[in-house]
Structures are given as C-alpha cells and as structure tokens.
Image (cartoon, rainbow, N blue to C red):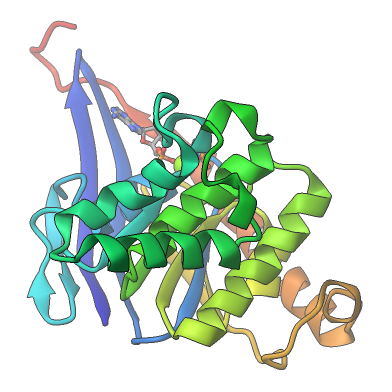
Length: 270
Ligand SMILES: Nc1ncnc2c1ncn2[C@@H]1O[C@H](COP(=O)(O)OP(=O)(O)OP(=O)(O)O)[C@@H](O)[C@H]1O
Ligand SMILES: [Mg+2]
C-alpha cells in the first residue's frame, strides 16, 4: 500500500541546513498498523508530512497504492500532532468533521450520516453542536480522529496524536485506534515517541534513529490481536519487546548525539 524509497529531507534556509531524514526505505502493507518510534526531533513529523504529500522530499520517493505521491493523495487522512490547531474554532464539531467530506461527491444525507457515525465511534455522538473550545483536550483529539474517520480513508497517518492528553484518555484512545483499525481494516501509520504505545498498538514497529533518520530496526509485534491495557502490558512478551525497542532507541540516541545540524556551506553568509 505504501512504499517509501530512499527518502531524504534536508531543510535549508536562513543559513541553516538541517538534514532531518537521512535515507529511509520501508513498506507498509494494505490493512497493516505500523508504528514508527524514534527520539524527539528525529524527523518523524517530517517523514509523515512527506508521506502525506504535505512536504516535498529532497530525494527519494513515496508511492501510495502504486502511485507516486506529489501532493496530498486522495484517500489519505492525517491526524496532526497539535490537535489544538487542527480544528477550526469558529465551526461546530459537526461542521469540523464534515469539512473534508465536502471535497467528495456525496449527497448531504450521506455526509451527515458519515459525520454522525464517526462521532459515535469516538464516543462523541452528543458533541456535534458544540464548539471545539468547549471540549476538553482529549475530546478535541477525538474530534480530529472522527474527522479523519468520516473521510473513510484507506490510509490513516497519525502523528503523535495522544501526546498531549492525560494517561487515562490516552489508554482509551489507543484502544479506540486498535478497535477502528480492526473494524475498518484501514492502513495505519502511527508515529510516536512512546515505546510502550508503539508496542501496544503496532503489528510492526519501525525504530528510527536520531536525525538524519534511518530505519534502525524493524520489529514484528507478535502479541495477540486482542489486546487490552490491563493484560497486554504485563505480559512477559510485551516486556521483552519493549526492552528491545528501548535498547534500540538508546543506541539510536547515542549515534545521533554527534552533530545533527551542519554548519552552513563555506562562502555563504547567514
Ligand atoms: N520547517 C522546518 N525548517 C527547518 N528545520 C526543520 C523544520 N521542521 C523540522 N525541522 C528540523 O528537522 C528535524 C526533525 O524535525 P521533526 O519535527 O520532523 O522531528 P520529530 O521527530 O517529529 O520531533 P518531535 O518528536 O519533537 O515531534 C529537527 O532538527 C527540526 O529542527
Ligand atoms: Mg513531530
């Protein structure tokens, strides 16, 4: 479904040059839930934006269902890291969720049904008439997820979507993602810096190195498909897997502690 080939992204400007993504190659099968985990600042958001066609890579390509990504591909939904900035405060929750559907050739009745269904599946059936700022942080993030779901994406890209919510809400939202993924068979690429979250959610975990990012390690999560917060997290296999990922991240951090921002090329003034 998704193929990332030799992806590289260098940010340049104002005399600064940051090689965020070094050389990334990986694939994600249709209907797979893959977690990307890596240290803060390692280029996860950059990578996801390239995959979602929001940023143009410096080198390499991204293919989605066999097509080269050159802009936001249809059928892809994005849940951003900063939910606070991803909903329009002047629109009611229902309108926010409905917004992307306006691009689709759907009748009003069908649109309304998709909105209602998506809000119900994140437990916010009653919130359609509220404004985002009347909701808690966790609820706002659920609205952002509902908006992505209502669009009925084939591919769902999620960038640390639960980083800013409390632990209990986060656990609920993790279960929600697993449940929706299993029900709808969406291809999910889930970015996080949280090792436990990556192991709990993923069918596979890609460990990214510090920037310039490469895939440091790839791990198949052979935990049963039925996971629950109480039992899965105390299973011996869970502990083994998280230790493995933890060690890899530590190695990645050490490798990345050498200069990550190159000085500007000689002869150029800042
Ligand atoms: N628009 C930009 N211009 C210049 N440099 C950038 C830009 N966006 C990100 N960077 C740099 O690229 C590197 C990777 O940033 P990115 O946001 O992709 O990391 P991340 O892994 O998502 O971090 P976090 O875990 O904190 O969200 C960082 O060194 C960052 O400073
Ligand atoms: Mg990020």
